[in-house]
Image (cartoon, rainbow, N blue to C red):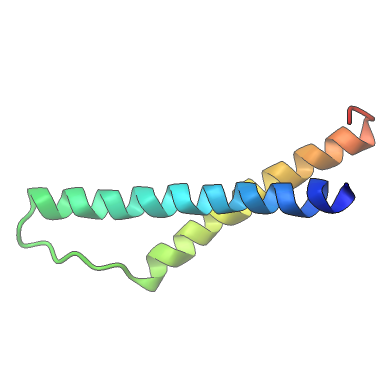
Length: 75
């Protein structure tokens, strides 16, 4: 129960945050390439690292919300 509450749930949320931010970055690059034909479309490590910020932020929010539930006995 605690493993699911403090590891699996935040991990799944983090993966969702990562994929959302990574998809947004890729789509914005695709639209830029469509409107500016001279733009070279490439995915760099910076895109991956920025998406990791989305993972970390979502993981932290889910973890802290679950911690608050346990602390105040809402679960």
